[in-house]
Length: 308
Image (cartoon, rainbow, N blue to C red; front, side):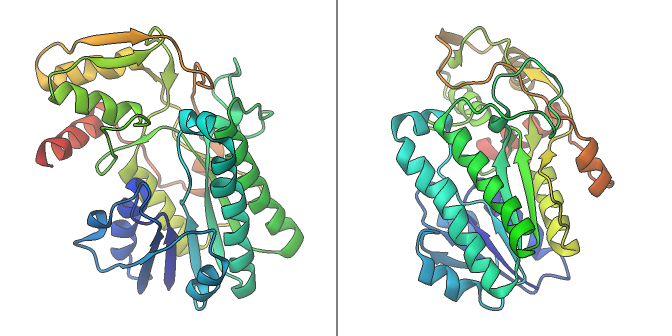
């Protein structure tokens, strides 16, 4: 089984490549990445072919997908704040890029697993968020991810392409980058705390997230690849946990053994107040999937940060 991972040198992509190499069904793993946010070093110790290029390069996609069994499409322009700065760039990478991947996959009848985002739900009071809820995206990023998943589901219905769409919820873990303006909350907290600087909290810190460990996500994705799982509707890839940013900070202080200073700023535009997944659909298709406790995953992530 030949698997192409777009965004394969990124945080989730590199963790997935490692997981795929442990599956006997997988004979070859190719990572396609433009290295705008991914790092070649993330794949340095893996028997993975890294192809530097963009999903907007249609001839490259056509060449790369020849003979491919499954494409796991993770390449994207991430971050809600980044999409507010340049909405067009987010659309091109996330919506148009996904369409190009799907069209290339259609030519070779490849199975396509597409990464979407919990941001498509918007700021609804309904918790947990089931896949049947109306979508109310609040940012250009969320709109672009909704378009991406809609294209994938439409290709399944229109052309019979085998597709599976996952909505990710606040994935964290080793290899997640920090030290930049658009860093996710877990690496941003860890990076600041380890440098002895205050962590930045946008808002009161009581906003909640369904944090999902990257190792768990990688195992579910790899299972989807090896079993060629298909669904005509999106799936939440999270387990219904709910922790506030202050809860996260308290766990970090416990792991570090000392208090961590914090600075509160105004809540950012486009940010959702509360997020929690309904996991019924996920558990029906992936009954062996199990979450990692946030305290354990955070300890593993802290250990990785300290080792780098």
